[in-house]
View 1 (cartoon, rainbow, N blue to C red):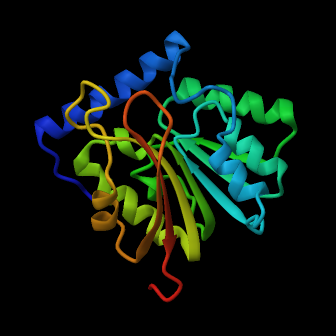
View 2 (view 1 turned 90 degrees about the vertical axis):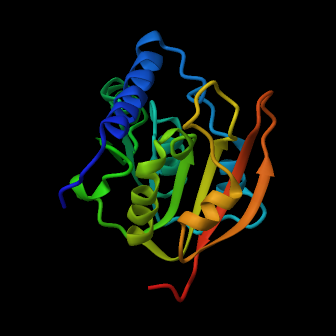
Length: 208
């Protein structure tokens, strides 16, 4: 479907891409530390672990968490907007002998890359919160179309004002508004020096 985007919106998208590419070129993306966060570990290995199924990671970076999920029995696909990150992720997947499909793709345009789902788990480590607002409904729609009934979305996000960037940040109210057919079942503040949150959403079992 053709999109009509304003010059401001195009500039926002280009600025986000440049910033992400700069982070990976400099080797210092703050969200890509090489350690799987305990919040994801708790879902996978905790007292009530999820049954392994199909998982999609949005903004996978260098592949740490995609490899982790694959090692724990999940069938994993992962996407990232930055080619440099994707190449590093593929190297990590190969070194780990893990079964992960890693694609260079825009998380708001999943129809373009042939990942039809359904998925039982979505994982997002600060991807959504950096997406320009005019693309966020497309992100939500893409996940909704690919979600199995009862699917979970575990999302880490920076709160508004965490960065000197007027378009970045996410709130619980925004997720409730944008993710129709999902229930926001948990919001846990992060431990970072700036406002951050872990959000858990569940796809309604009876949703179409």
